Length: 201
Length: 379
Image (cartoon, rainbow over all chains, first blue to last red; front, side, top):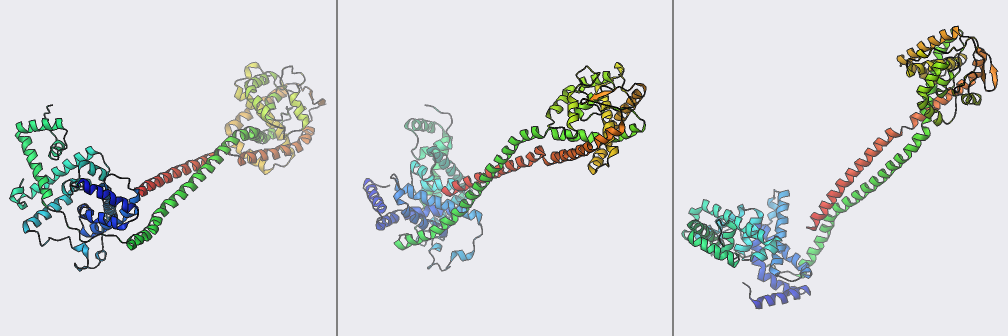
């Protein structure tokens, strides 16, 4: 949750970025890059594509920051990355086969695209299993349900912010979220033996 | 506020505190009394907790921008944007060209249709004159046959006068004929611009009432010796059509004089061949011709004044006079047929109209695709 001071800072950073100060914009990037990347990651269900989409979204946001007319900068930024991800999904639909060459260097150290795919060493096995289960289930949702539940339940946007990101009405957000949660419930119940005891439905 | 049922949306919104205070109070009241609703709320709460239990992924790297990255992205995006705009530009050009073609085609079609009525009115006499002369050429054969038995015949010049020309021969019949066909004949007479097949003398004859006929039947007779037309019994006018054909046959005999005297031209032969393909008409004409032959044999030969001069029933003289006019008539018939063939306005208008319609459909389709592409590019 952002405080009033942070919002003010955000406004100042946005205005500075609009004046062409790239450093100010980079501060905004550092603040939001985790949310932007995670949204892209869950929508695309592909770390490499999410990385590209995130970078592309930030460049696009910087180039069009002068068009930003105020309001929630986070919503505006997440909308840009959401649209970039939807474009990528459309491109995938047209060209479903991806060559291995597209992944570039397969060395994990050299290629950041491969870093986030696997389990994290610092996470417990139980948490790793839970993350994998969640990501599998989220990936089975429809595009819009996936985006809605990620924005609200993972990233923590309000209904209004989510409505702005997806450019839909508030009622649409409510219904999409409810259906997404219901679907997630069914999906998780199907694999309830993998859930930790405290999360068993 | 009491509600019997609560939807999943209500449950979900309740968990996020998104219900209005009134609805929330009502919901909580129901939950406290309804174990099923309690279970539903608990299940969904568990899902939300699971979703929030796992922390977000750490981004694989920082996405900090540099001026070089932005410049490079701009350099890359320009040709990409141009490439993206190129199909749209091509579609816009294609749509414009199609629209222009459609406008031109429509204009031409409208122009054509606009001219057509005038052209039809102007050339209306031509085909009819052609048909007339065609019949005359065909009647030539009948006339030849008739000439074998010398009979005085009236010499009608054109179809308008054909019915009238038989008046001296059979005044009563001819009166009926004239009455029957007068309406349609008047139109033809009025629209035929000239009297191509015949001399001015004959034209004058058309307008001049014949001697001995006080009716307004304008007889065009060149007196033919050897026979006189006796008034036919009134009951002989079986039908207007038959009688008309009878008079046509009489006309044909006159035309036959021309044919006999001159060498038949190819046009004449063609027209005769066409006429022969209509046996009904030919047979009827023949029947009436025979009838008139018998009448002529019984009747005295009246002298008929033609164009201010009295002519005797001299076949050879008539033929001699008529010969050059016959050539003219055939020439004019050929020209009329050519004119008819050269101006098939109605048949020309159809492909032009369909071309316009086709272009319109293509233009609409292109416009739709262009609009869709524009919308797609905007988004």
